[in-house]
Length: 182
Image 1 (cartoon, rainbow, N blue to C red):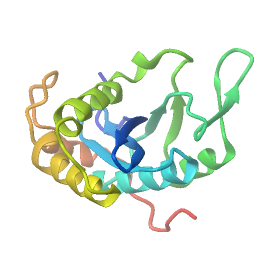
Image 2: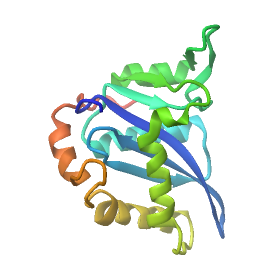
Image 3: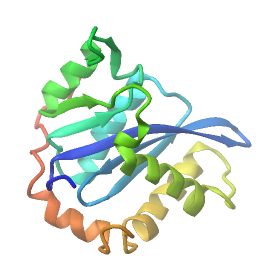
Image 4: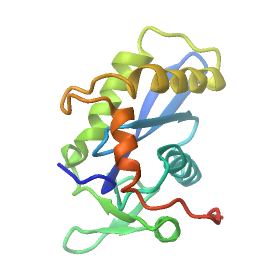
């Protein structure tokens, strides 16, 4: 278990739609289990950084650490001992927002189990059985699902509602920077 405001976990997931392959960027606050999701056509660094910015805004602050897998948009390579070497842009972004980027060990996806389970939940509870006109419609629907289902349900492992836990966690998040990242 992690402390309030301590960690967020991040991942991309791939989805097939009638209008092409899309990628969901998922960000989960580890203590409250509040989920933020946006779909896009790319898994690039701009998508990741703008998504993190939007997620932090939605959460009302910034966690102390952000846990990534070895995605190239965050991690440039590995040290001889296996530690992650973050790319320069991610380090600048993390410094601006005040969080510490952390990477899972290679091939250890279970290290970020909260966001991995959120991917499965997104597929089962939201994506399957729905139709979408375009990317805008997909993001409108996922925003509604987050507000009306995902973040107000009783979360299995915690037995509490993520949105209510966020209210408690918010005071433990670091303040959102006044000056936007460019």
